[in-house]
Image (cartoon, rainbow, N blue to C red; front, side):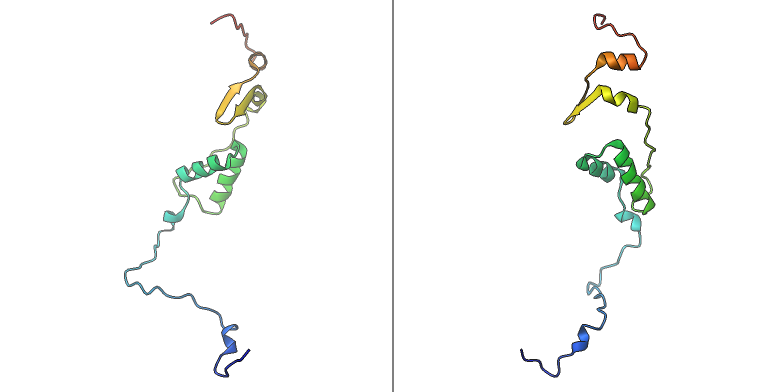
Length: 117
């Protein structure tokens, strides 16, 4: 391979500077909230990833810590009061149904008479 003496080897050692925009109309945004995640986009992301509530809360909490959420987004604490009843339900796709009504009623200390309407 032929190398010309005029070629500079120092180009690898020099730090490359970011190129300035040549567009005279371009003004970079100073409002960083334009690039933050809104509640709607966060909900879409959680739904797309099929995250359970506790994982969704963890994700939202981390995004909030990293200052990536829009100021209007509120992160709620995951409530565990329904965990004892989760065993009585089943989710298939987008549908959730009670698979053990008698067990659920017993856990809630309620009388259940399927004959009554």
